[in-house]
Image 1 (cartoon, rainbow, N blue to C red):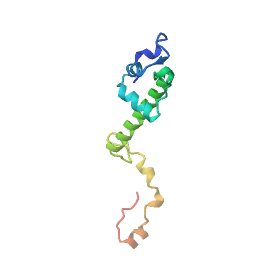
Image 2 (image 1 turned 90 degrees about the vertical axis):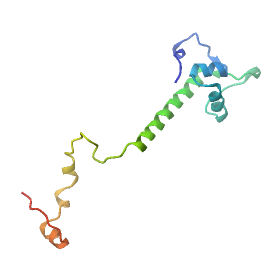
Image 3 (image 1 turned 30 degrees about the horizontal axis):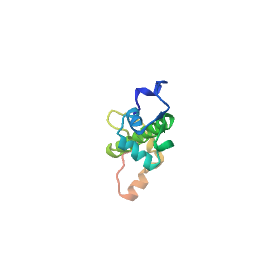
Length: 120
């Protein structure tokens, strides 16, 4: 998002809706929706709506952040969540997940009717 014009000091500070759309590489209707929603600031001197370049840059930075958050959200929805990582991940932490205290003793196992191998 945002054009190569951001670093150009010759670019005017105040942009019309069309210039702002070209600068941001979006449609004029996208600029109009942002103005209507209040997420993009503008001023209207002499019947002409103008957008300051810094306001547009701020709006673009916010839009890029929202896009990244949305993509992260989609990735979390689509990708299966594994508690142990996934294929190729060493599972050495599994031995720490179950402590010796959590393993039933022979007496507890007999009481529950479960056979347990003896520890070596």
